[in-house]
Length: 368
Image (cartoon, rainbow, N blue to C red; front, side):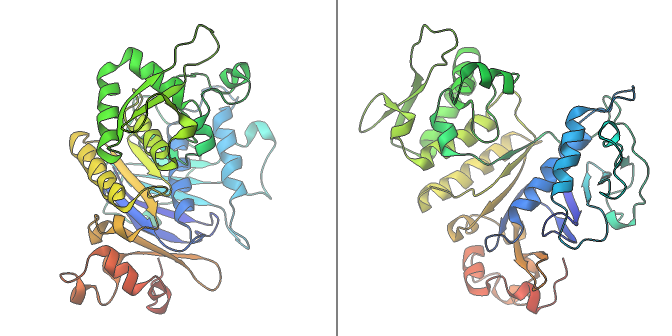
């Protein structure tokens, strides 16, 4: 589990340090840095799971990530982007290569990246930068992550675009992509090869959307034409994906990731409440808590704008974000509010958020 992250000079995250729980939810105004936190965590996890080849030729994926990081450099920043995390008793840090000193493309991946055997009690800020070190096979590293930013248009289409082009873009067409592409084929593969997970996924879906009776797939003789999802509901049978609600599709995409054979250890969820009725939001939180109990190495970090979801969280699991006048994000736990001790036994987290808002992060001088 990642217990702490520190992010500097990445988009509006100019200097934030955040403690994390196994289930953490970020809440705050639009464009206040919530999604950027998820993006930074996902990038850092990917960087430390890439094994640098022994030859001089750099890993192409690492090169792509380096470019992605550099594009997020904070406006007016005078130093490089720094991402750090504490996980499993070790601290991991990454520093981007400056634009002014960036070498030719084959060497771009030589950015500072190092893992340390420091105790998590040590501050991330106390760690010194060292040259790039290859991640050794089998070594303890950051968790396998997925940042889910599901798009309904991708979830609807069984084969978006040209099927041949789709197969070239995704090495494994049976794996759903973070934006929802490949949902139909991924679930068809699950139904065929992992029936227990397929049944568990449908049971979880009915827990949140009770009107769904079962899922199945169309039969197709075309080799390159994937089977499309069909929904049997209380009101009608054989509904295609474009005739069910947005909330149903978004929940299904989340469950597809959580029940996949290559299930990630760190699930990063943007707009967890999108498209869901308040009762369904609460059912989703209950479902995720159940998965956390049965999957000991799972961690969930999400963003939301729903007080109903916050009511299902502990106050220590809620992080709030706000922008200072200079455009930099301030982030702190809901328990940091000066009136929290007075109201902690009288109000739910959702009620506290509705009453306190987020401006107190700046007004009270919270620096991180």
